[in-house]
Amino acid sequence: MTSKLFEPLTIGSFQTTNRIFMAPMTRGRADAERVPTEIMATYYRQRSGAGLIVTEGTFVSQQGAGWVNAPGIWNDAQGEGWRPVTDAVHQAGGRIFLQLWHMGRVSHPDFYGDGALPVGPSAIAAKGESHTPKGKKDYVTPRALEASELPGIVDDFRRAAARAVAAGFDGVEIHGANGYLIDQFIRDRANQRDDDFGGSIKNRWRFPLQIIDAVAGEVGAERTAIRFSPVGQYNDMADSDPVASYTYGAEQIAAKHALAYVHLVEAIGGMMHNADAPPIHPHVRAALGATPLLLNGGYDFASASAALEEGVADAITFGVFFLANPDLPARFEKGSTEFNAPDFATLYTNDAKGYTDYPAL
Image 1: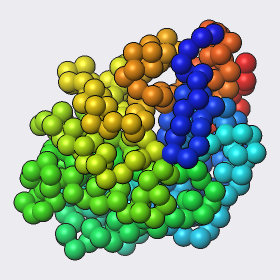
Image 2: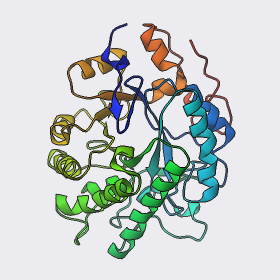
Image 3: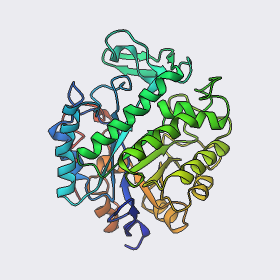
Image 4: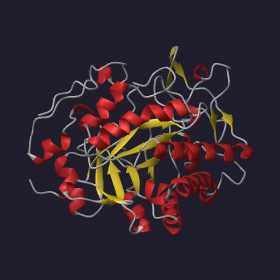
């Protein structure tokens, strides 16, 4: 079957086998110390036919953690635990980036043990619930970060990126989407600071751009990517002028770094779709120049092929499709109309069911 989805794409210093990428998806299969487990290596190896795999969000610090059994990469044991995953994917001919994650205000005191509050740009609680070790609980009002604390978080991202590359990852994707810490600084519903890190678009981008600078400086811009969700509403997020904000952000990124790619969650359907939002990707694409743009959210084979043919993106990332169909690129190439249905009841359980037991075609 003919489609640009099957063409290679240059990402940083390597070429992908196709443009059918696997989106990051939290699955909760790490152990209690947030160390990756053997079954995770199997899961990612099964999906190594993707042009690029982006792992589930992986915490850069204890402070940033806020999901039961999601992995980390802030200590040696966690870094070493990722090595079997990268080895398995590379042995199967795949490429893999680690997603770097800090949850910010949507963590919960139950994850810290000492009663500490989660942190955010401002002391504004998100509407919604946290899945804590003690069950579902309402999000709490976070503690507003002091400006003096931000360099330490920047360094957490830098050190996590270094540890990821040392563990064999081809690169890292900074999680700047879906209502987590970086997204909270960018968008003005969550960021109502009156210092150098809030107020104007320029100020709200200051901290995210410092993280990009630090990570790219540590592992190279060609191994550094970032994901945004300019109009996503998940975790009670919104922005008063996303076109202006993300155009500015993309211009600043392009002026300083030739990143591996920029990844936008701008869903055309499904749970992340915001029908009332303006399109952001044309503005970001124009500002980025030669930097590859990835789009995510609600795509199937036909809509993804059309997006590449029209030149609105360079690759498409698939989430739920890849979750239930480990051989997704092969199914697309064969023109298959048979796809496994995802079992949403097993998204965040702790064994093989609904994780590594989905059959190939």
